[in-house]
Image (cartoon, rainbow, N blue to C red; front, side):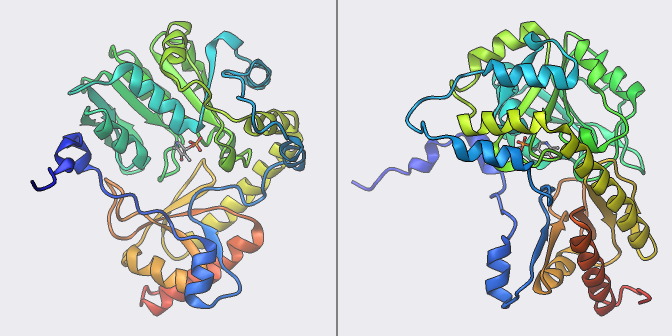
Length: 362
Ligand SMILES: *Cc1c(COP(=O)(O)O)cnc(C)c1O
């Protein structure tokens, strides 16, 4: 007998999920193009790295054979002090990605409506498919701010500052969404880089505000995310979460970065200053949007697919957004790194635009 086609057993909605194409690594690009210097400004990582104190703390750990605590009180306490929020409204997860997955586990089953506002963070679309939900679209204006016009939903995701566009959402609009009767997940991965945040809404009984140590705190590899939510949702969260979402080295380094807020403030100031400089430089040549995050979004009138390939061959990796739902070929996102990296990016970007006939005056 022939082997049965086991692929038939896979959840149907997964066939709608595009294969994940990870960004190219620095090592890959160095090898492929024989380059000595390659910089990566494609994943909104923190080029300054984590606080030295966190790295020291990470290195000390030896009890690799022991399970970590499930929701470590020490870390929850530090986050509670950092935000000024009660401990019993805080939960931890393996990054915001892990936190959001738990929220889907609690609320979303086949056919449930999830409100998303493209262009936005691609993982949201993937989760809707995995949980067989139904995507409902909320519009955006010409500056990419959400324009909610009463669409019905069970779960809404508000990303502010939004990835990849960098804008924050208006409080009045977020309030309308919150008042419309569903659960609202607010993703504030970039809150530390922004002049405004939406944390006050976490007081509401239907709102979850998620944050991460991956971006401003420079702990992307440690996978530490958290959320502020109502106690009734926290109870459910603890039921659905995997038992040990965070490793002890992650917990320890997270506590250490939260003890070194001087370093955080210094890094954030550097990145914000550089963000304004890169914005001014790019604005002379292309349409670039103001940003409250550690990246800039630009809409070019040349192919971003081609431009990003060319840039890569010159040793600069940035994000081509043409594959993002709601974007077009021409859209790019560049992370703000250290000053020397940003200057290198600007130099190579203008070179490539010139080669592509983008009308850049050098
Ligand atoms: C980077 C990013 C995340 C992922 O954060 P982790 O805590 O590393 O999982 C989530 N949401 C947005 C909008 C992001 O840009």
